[in-house]
Image (cartoon, rainbow, N blue to C red; front, side, top):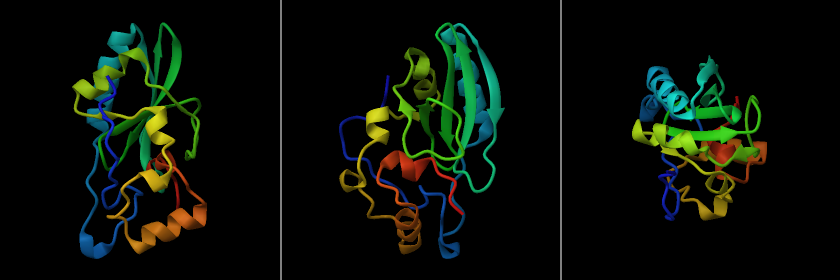
Amino acid sequence: MVNEGNDRFTLPRGATGFCRSEDGPLPETGLSAFRAALFAAARVAGGEVGEVKERAYPQTFHTATVIGREGEKIALCHAHFPWVAFAKARQDWYTGGFLAPPPWAHAFANAGFTVLSSERLDTPLSDVDTSALTQSEWREICFHGITTLGGILFNAWD
């Protein structure tokens, strides 16, 4: 279900939400694609989609809830790359507190998203390929004291 493999995670340019103007705009993960996957997941979960919140600058992610037989789950969707994660609570940004994907998370993978496990998101940056990140991205990472993959992906730095 979690389609991330055992390989080293490679962060592409802009995974932090920052980009250089000379590199052009970052790709966008459309809210409509995330919303469609949410409704498919809710059907599998035997529940419904709760609040869907489009990202607001400077957040790098959209959030939503799926209310199923097991209760409410918070789904996070990266705004620039098709990555989905699950969290314990809604927050403005995350440095931890990620959950294992629920059994119905395969609906996101079926819709073309990569579902990230809590173990993957807690991966130390020393175990992540960060070679594509720019100096300005590294300044932000260091300034905010981020040490994990999840902290880089689901942030609200300004």
